[in-house]
Image (cartoon, rainbow, N blue to C red; front, side, top):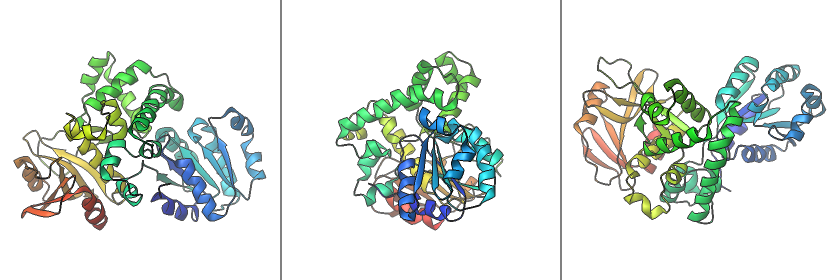
Length: 389
């Protein structure tokens, strides 16, 4: 079992808050992590799966049921399926504010956050569990190449071989992304449109969002396709990377870039069947860019925000990290050990009033390209540069 960084953070929150919302995509290990923590704290858990009819029946009178387990930690899995519970949790928590009383897991952030914000404000802490990150994988002696190729879902990353990983990811896409999302959000989503939309996103990973293009290709309206995109983001499957446009007079591209968050899912959608095919695949550059963006976004300090930057005059930068309204770091992503930088990156440094930038590559030693640019590998960026910001 791979040790997750979130375990210690969750343990701290359990000592401070009556309820913790553990959010993340399906099959990422939320319930496993919650059970691990309960074992460490020597506190007997009571588990309810809100997608199981039997547990839903038991929760018809939640206030009475929770009272019977006053000394236990209660885990409510996929809690967004029963939003009425939020209202029931509030008086139970207020009656006796015991830290670590409830762990709520959810795979759909909009519904969960909406219910919590209306009922449990000030009583709950949030923690997103991402797929396994590169530093976590490396601690388990899993190489960067394998992690990039298979992605961070535990069952895919730890599969016995690449064929088993492909089978898992293919079934995840077919069962969850194409069908279960409708159940998750309580709306009617067309399986055919979701499937085709998903393949279009994979083919254009890291592209700048244009709702009209997608809508026209899929035969639906722009508001409909934007709603589908928001559902995928709400299920933690898609990342919309916003553009940075504060404090500049330049004509900027303002639409977000859209990435499939897990590289393993992306590779299956794009038909990359073996790890050794990846470097020669036409999508390798976009895949590497998305992989780096996701690792940085998942591991950045919480006081920083992540953006990209692009103007209509050619200045561009793949990653901007900001503290408040001030850019503090700019980085370009290249799938090359000898990257050639465009004038546009240096222009973006001037626009953002940054004296120095980075280019992130797959491997190799850190070296100074020139007085304004340092080239380093992803591991060094994540472990040396990012924590120091």
